[in-house]
Length: 189
Image (cartoon, rainbow, N blue to C red; front, side):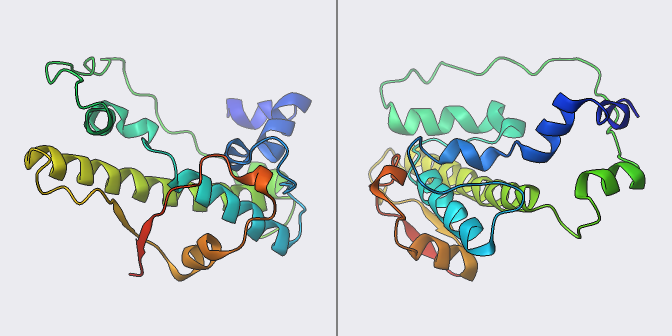
């Protein structure tokens, strides 16, 4: 209920309707805009750039699994990192009950639309990032278990047909290439 009342505040409303995570993967100077009312073509270009830049990042960890997924990836890239290094134990804080938005609050955010493009883009990016993180951790653990002897050096991720299309799109400009110089191996499901 507190979030629903907060939506009446201009700053909270602006964050809820305009702030999307995808923007963090669009380098400054990249001429691809992201806003709730952008055209489908512009959305595809923005998502294409974000996916390509995300796949080029060496360590990808989801916040909900940082405790178990960060160190295997760090050890894979920093081989001299001590095997005695461990993540701190999770906090014993009481878990908060999940907040649910009322239909009225959802209607206010979506403004009568079936979906909100920024949320759709972030959801796709989150799902892709989660699969990358899972593949990177599995790859790092395989390489670690084999002592690095049978490590192929490639991390493989399954992608959807849409993601394959987006990853194959040409760059809109060189300014959009943040880290994406590496080659990735992708497999269709």
